[in-house]
Image (cartoon, rainbow, N blue to C red):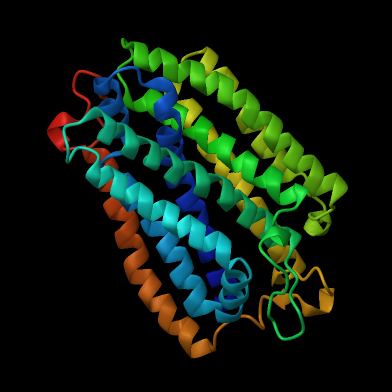
Length: 344
């Protein structure tokens, strides 16, 4: 495997890890106003993701940094062409981070309610917009002959990208509900509500994902270059979705969370396979000849070699630290605890 291919798939790995990890804490934050009935339950739900949410965001920083250093042309076209979307995502993430820190600084219910809703918006907006970004990656942007993207903000929202955003939003909610089943004590009403939410939002996520698959494979034919096994990953995603229903009915919480996570993994990998099999990192909707190819968008060999050494050292350290963090905070939470002793 040459370094260009290696770094393309390492970028795919960072995005996959980001959606897998950040997906469940986005989902918990979105579900929190729907599930919590008391202040203790609010804090319990926040406590389930309190030790993890900021560490999960490391992966989107890593993904952007790796794209900038190894595929600068791809980075420049994508981030300039979808600049308003990325600015909104960034502002939403900043608002969400501030809400975690400010929520308990004033002992007033109206103050806490305000920051709870800011955290909710800070999770809903990027959950939807990341789906739009992934859909536009394979649908393409209006790239001209100078590798610049034409068009305005509204041009980014097509039926396919809108369905992609809706699919990621609902899938993250399902993933978050399944994560709560691992983190909450089973003898609480909050746990029962989380199970009901997993069944409800899982059904809606299934419909949205099926719509995305039908549009991508049948209507838009964006995955026609997959070769002899074009339906492998969509079928795998369908199997994992079906397994979630089986797991929830049998109260196999770990399996349900694993399956929703695998659905996110298979969906993300499908996007990058669609790019790789066509040999492009950003298709052009103006003229296929303007599409940014894998090799032409890559950095010079010296940069790729240097980044390989850097990545080989730091990526395992980051992964190891996060594994340790999840192990330390593995215990379930009760509403009467609510993360009070952790400061969340």
